[in-house]
Amino acid sequence: MKKLTLAALITLALGGATYTALAQAGPGPRGPAIEQLDLNQDGNISKDEISQHRADKFLSADTNGDNLVSAEEFAAFSELERERKQIERQNRRFQRLDSNGDGVVTAEEHASVADARMDRMFERMDADGDGLITEAEREAAKEKMRERRGKRGYGRNG
Image (tube, rainbow, N blue to C red; front, side, top):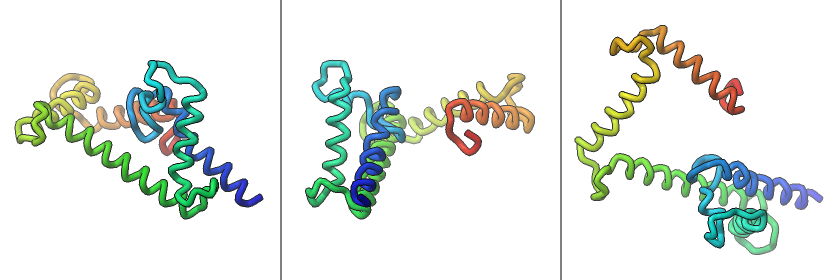
């Protein structure tokens, strides 16, 4: 019974991210990209494809092939998934910085991305448009962010 309960919990944990991924445009912390779920590449995602994706994840975690995932196997699988996602995030960040795609980031490319990010921050936070972000504007931006996070159901207060 204990193994069955553990297996059920692991199945939920391995498959749970799949369902939230349907709303995402790309891979991220909540699950795989929609493209990864479209196993037959027909542009649609069926329940069977989601089930197959979940089963594939389970098999990946079941390293000894006994059709059970032990706590040790789950920990190892989770660590590999964490590392894989971290590498994907690093690659996406690098690609954003390497605007010309030559495999290296110049100081100019880095500055361009940083300047664009700074411009977006000022657009959001500099309410009076004077080119300065005051303490009051910072506090207002923090409150707005708290409200947005609360509506999405995550964060410290959500």
